[in-house]
Image 1 (spheres, helix red, strand yellow):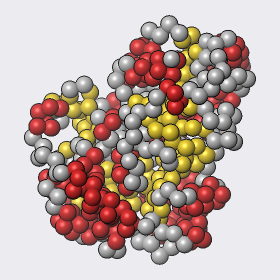
Image 2 (cartoon, one colour):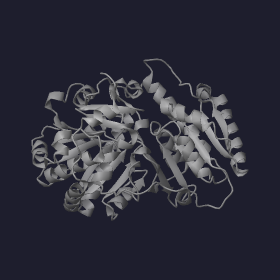
Image 3 (cartoon, helix red, strand yellow):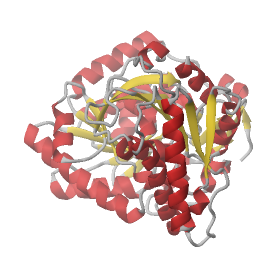
Image 4 (tube, helix red, strand yellow):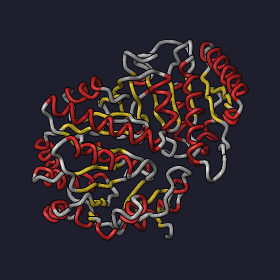
Length: 476
């Protein structure tokens, strides 16, 4: 598939419906939904569109019941399953589905469950949603009509047009199957057409020809009755592919979706972060200011942890190096193959990081940029070593003896492990975004550094200069 020019493509898309009318219809439908929305997030970046929403980092009965009893209609459970093996992922999702079903029954509240995955289509799909479906159906009278696939994520330049999912690079749209993300060693794929992608990932179980396709033309013309009719006809857990290039498209789809749900249809969801914002009724808010982020009067330096290896992170890291207020420390993670050398490397970094931050110096610890490659047939072994490396990165934060003025973690798995293990967060509140698509947690009272601003910087979001701009903002 050829690359497309962004402006040319967007100029051919039908004009937007009136925002006021759409918002009025959406508000009305949301008020009638009356379901708790439980979002399972396979890494912490899924909160990149919301604010004043809870994130729980475990799926204990206590945490899930607390989420159900909140006034908010939606809460997130951080599974971090993108860093799991398939076996670990299956186990976790069975546990979550059971606890959610039990708590929903206890509190007498119906629920919608959303599997929030990567906007570039990586992750344990269809394993996660199939395990959720099968477990919930085995425990309750719920029967799922179909599965909605909606990876649109405007802040990251991810668009679905004519059923093909695109990733924006500057002024070009590249089919997802032609990007570096599709070559992921663990979660690779070849299809850019989402119906064909679902068929590919399900090994032919769900055919592209059996999917329902929600067109931009129907969304833009507010042909809601037709959209509802399409959704009402879905059966046998076949896929619903949603085209979208703007939040207005998601809003119109959600209006039709809620009408179909109220008419008796039940859906599973595999989506990026845009759907959660709209179906959760989260309003827009300005980007966070330094005053909201750095509240402590301490003179300690900040901490930046860089683990992601995608091309965009490497480009952003090169820009970050231009900041003369940052001391850079390379973590030679290839030493993971030698236990003693790896241990000594961790000790060196912990000692140096503590001393520098205490002296008011902001520190960036970055993992060696060359990937550890064990060969084509050792993907599971590589994933196990990646977890060991991530645990080591986490231990650096865990062993901090001084409170940094701020913490930035670069990369989904890195930020998850630092948040849950390094900082010991059980419950956090999403403060908002420091830049589009880059969320910030306020850590809970039970964490290592209560109330600190923890910036969760996805590996593949932002421009070349965004990481440097965030660091400069927090440094002040």
